Amino acid sequence: RVYGMKWLKFTGGVFGVIVVIAGGVFFAMQDAVKQFDRPALASCAESTEPACDASFMGDSGSIDYRLVKPENNVQPQAMLVVLHGAGLTAAGQYWLADGNLDALATREQILVVLPDAGGDIQVWKDGENPDHPAAQKLPNQLPVVIELINSLAAEYGIDRREVSLVGYSNGGTMAMRIACEAEVAFRSVGSFGSPISQYQIDNGCAHSTPAMIKHGT
Image (cartoon, rainbow, N blue to C red; front, side, top):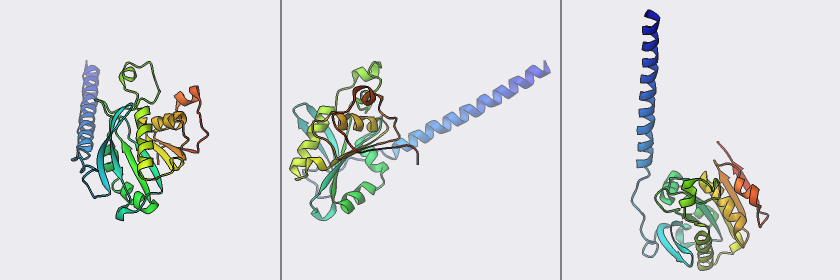
């Protein structure tokens, strides 16, 4: 009986610790999300600032995006497309960069484009786990993203072959999919914090494209 009481106290203590840790993690995640819940930037049609927000309507649909231009109206020489992770947004990915995308755009004289996956869960249809019920409900954003890239490249006089793609997590596997399936090859593709795309292993790529796949620090 004494042994049983000690065991109950021990398990109760462990359970209490788990509850406290879980509660702390939950509230920490809530705080992390809130710090990126910031107002939208001014519309690109009205703003003179390097970073702005816009919407694109193409033949295959519409998509929102954040645009970061070089300062002082410098003509961009290339384009970098950044795809956010699952559950995040283009704005959230921009704030996570903590000003580095603005500095990058000016230093390298490039146009930085952050498309938004849209929908209720902000997830890219990257081809991974196609039989999952949630994946089956996702829209196929690939055609409109490619339309957006082609449109901005033409608008800013950027050689379409000077466009690179990078993505984080779900955005990384989506970047790999876009780079493989687009009709025109990209200069390079980067996937960060995400697995090598099983979808592309199974389906292959239409282009040979320099790639960087990176995990951790």
